[in-house]
Length: 381
Image (cartoon, rainbow, N blue to C red; front, top):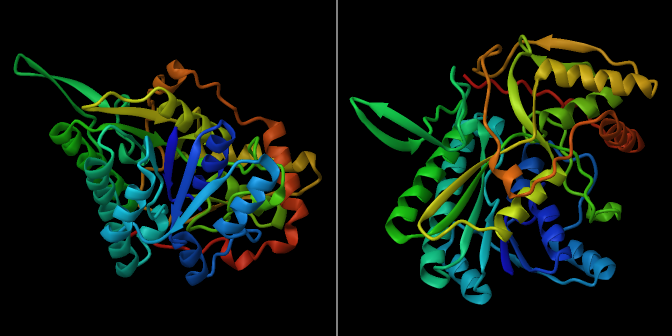
């Protein structure tokens, strides 16, 4: 397929580009380096330097023989969006092109406004471009399990059958986000659902849990590794804990540590996206999958990291800190996640070997850790 990856410089975007390119697809990546600028502006640089997209694609071509095209620009700008879609006429679009951080969205009025503007306008522009330039193409959007919140009932896969006053109807599952970022993702879903109904678009919305790791089948050359943030704004919790363990920094468990979420290895993100592309949604269908493989509490993750780090001779402590977020610290959590398994996903689970490899990699890059970046105490209230 001819696939357009929007947000192709990001933690997930670039690995996805290599993965799909390696499977023989024609790939164009689009980005405006927003994540790089935000990290620089907030003094939370990744653990190691990452080449720009042009250099990444040159390295990838030298290793794999596959060419990935690059277009740099702002997808909030309709003229650029039209240029991209007119030039590529994609069979499918993978939409990662959003401000990706819940804590960042709660940082300030400026950060909140940027999150709203970027995330919603980019999604709207993608919808308009598909309608105008490639109406049969599928949109695969990366959503978030955070859209659901932590309800006291089972979380279904996107939809809920409701019986009321002797009548039945199917609705989008009720959603109650805990951050502005997650709220914009709810708005994304609503926007896509509206245009699916109006214009018969084909959309797969992947409600993804927090991702961990950095190794894929395609990035044996260290220059092709993704961003690895370990700060409070852009680092996911397991990646943060691994770096904290290596740095001798107590693992920062927010409050009681009973917060439960669904997690997945970065390899599974790539496979979920690929499966969604290979087995697409139908025109007029908003297909929703809950994209995770295992659930853990924060306390469980901390103990897993402590154990694996201890086996490598690292002395790790766990510290409960005042929770900077407004969230339930103990709650019921039982989300369904059968759709991607039925498409053929073979999960990569969180094993001691996976943690050991991550820890050893970070140990080799220990000199790059800046402890002042780890915990900035961003208050969500």
